[in-house]
Amino acid sequence: MNTARDEISYQIEECRKVWHSFEYFLDEYVWIEDKENHTDLKLELWPKQREILQIIINEKLIIILKTQQVGLTWLAGCAYPLWQEIRNPLDLTVAISVNEDMSQELLQRVYFILDRLPPWLYPPIKTRTKSVLEFQHINNLVSTFKSLPTTEMGGQGKTPNRLILDETCKNRLIREIYNASYPGIQKAGGQIISISNSLKTGAGWGWTRDYYTDSMKGKNDAKRIFLAWNADPSRPKDFRARVKMAGMDDHEIKERYPESEAEALEAASGGYFGDALKRHNNPIPGVKGRLKQDKQTKEIEFIPDIHGPLEVWRHPYHLIKKWDGVFYTKRYAIGSDVSEGLGNTYSVAPVKDRLLDETVAKLRSNRIDAVDWAEQLRLLSLYYGNHIDRSEGRKFKLDKETALVCVEVNGSGQTTVKELIKKKVNQYVRMVPDVVGSGLTHQYGWPETPDAKYELANDLKQWFKRMRGRLYDAILIDQCSIFIIHPNGRLAHEEGVGKFDDDVIGYGLMEQASLFMGEGPKKIIPPVTGWRADKLEEGKKAGIWAS
Image 1 (cartoon, rainbow, N blue to C red):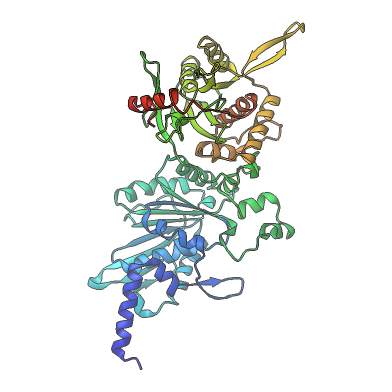
Image 2: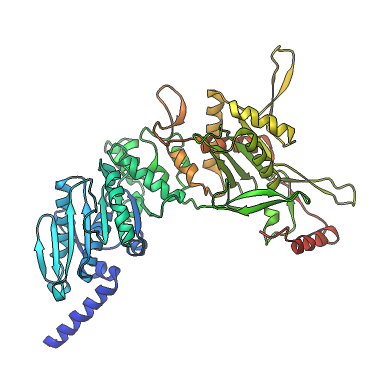
């Protein structure tokens, strides 16, 4: 039989374990409400929930985009701050919900967990109301959980250790709340956790989407968490088919039970690319820089520069340290949308590696005019140039040409095309009837017409579906998610301030360049001795082959 001393020792040990581990607290002590069956339910963490616990604990800025009914509000908005208030005197959590009813419901969830904890696991309760929970720690120190309805003041006043922003997609003042709260919380080293579904009709969806996609692009420091409908392992594989049979339409299913980030972020009216982006949900930033040509050697050098217009995910294959000495023909293709360079729209030029079947680099700027943009394209097409085997008999000879560039011939694009002709850069060329109808003539670039845009977008969509490689570009994924067919038949981005589709067009043009090149890359294998060995060693010593 356990003695009173044994029981006290057990309680002390349990308090120690809970203090040190949020996961232990959840596994051993947290119960949640099963509203469907009107009963208590011991929390059993799903694998996807368990994966994100350390993010919730360690990251200062977190944006959670989730499907419905996957327990994230219980986990990150209730159990986590409660755990912190139990452990830390003088700790303050402020939770802001859309309205008073929702703010009270949030705190009721906290009380639901609290009331099922053994009383020895938490400090004495000082205050318990519909909006405030306070614990009385030793030395009269108090920790507090405040659950408030929406107010523009946000987390101002006494700066909280953490700010919980619940259902941000529905909060009409979320932008003002965040902007008012962030400076003070950042200065104090506090934490902001934003939690939301992807309901596009919500008054706060614009901010929620922008904040989430900015984290994808590296424009803010927020760590993003996405939980798809199948994060709940109890849901059958045909779960979405079942809810469709129950009367929910496709768009509503994607909003409430998204399968991927791209689907969750898809335009309110249904994105043009739809399921084509389903598996492309884990973009990563490249290395920023610029290209420079040595005046004497004519070699193109990549200069790292966080403000540079070029983002590189993979350098040319023959410049990496593990290059095997094999060259390729027809490996790289480039597309380019061209802007005026006045700070409004962007000039964009992605590079496709046709062997890996993925984009390896991208030029992007809204401050380079059409003439200077042509020079940037020249450097890019040289850096990612294609090799040509000009061997004759036993004499091995290797040559190099610029990568093929396909430019959209809009107003600025015409200027860029003319400059590229002067610079002798390989360009996409179509044969079209001449103006008098007596023959064919060369037409450089891709025409800017509605029909041509449909063809471009459709070919890009098909590439997304079949591509073997990875899609790294967060900006492109973002733009594709709001690329729609408007009621008048126009194919473009969703209307709104700060909405662009320049990257979509640039990538579409890149795919046109790749299709124009025909068959895929072929190997050029230099002789094992002689040229190959000498050149490889010479290149290594000179640093030419170093990445």
